[in-house]
Image 1: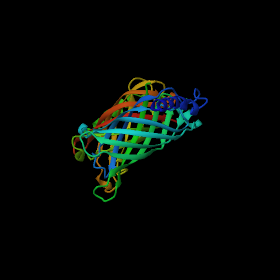
Image 2: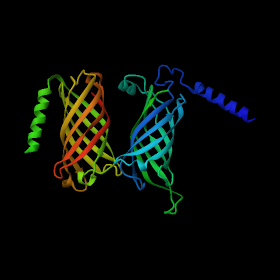
Image 3: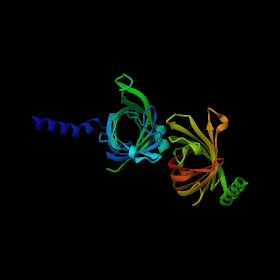
Length: 189
Length: 171
């Protein structure tokens, strides 16, 4: 039984992209690239309890679904305090993005001078401090996401941190936030 | 006195490198800006995530002026701000059609404290961009790995500045 379910899941994974894919994918910004490396400067604010400096986030991104709507991608990587340099306060981050829909505005293509797509996203992350301490999460929006062939750009993403509310009596606290100035993902596979 | 001499030297160097442009050109710039300092309090800059936005005014084929503002995004959005202007010289060729280039920038900046407008500190800046790809001819330019220093005039302290990437769009 398990074997059949696994086989059905595998077939669904293989067929789903081709069923939901854009018909004229060769003309658009879509590409066969699905595994990339992301770099982004980011910072935390509010009552986060984290160092207030600038962090550099490096992550591997898996973006396997060439769909037009509800496009999921996952990322895993490290967020390292860069200025001031404090690697002992690094965080491991796992993130799930969901690009809600895909548009191909003419203005964007003329600015980029090639096929380009606009795909705003929502995201959820989990963080684990490498030095120990409680893990925490975040939920956020990525309003400016652009896909251009083998690259994915995200500009000014904002998230609210979700921490356990042990001291306040509430189950969870939303008193801190993170800002990602931009994220540049270069796909190499 | 020293500042005056430095300013004159920068201006002289800029004019020496400059060649008449066929026309003025104009662009907009956006970048991430990082500050590194041994003593952030003394430098008058708080550790955080900063964004830089500017306007590029191409005066000559090798010289451009860039007024800019650097704003704090975290930990307190828009609380800290630095405004200034750079004179930038293209070292490897014309800004208009040299696809690869290297830039040297010098300028003045002032910290803006919205709570106490008179308390902002004054800085001289010197930065080098080792690699720029694109130019006005193509309408886009990416300046990479720009590094330099801010010299705070009153406290005589140095702050390292770094822009991993600056996106320039020419109109």
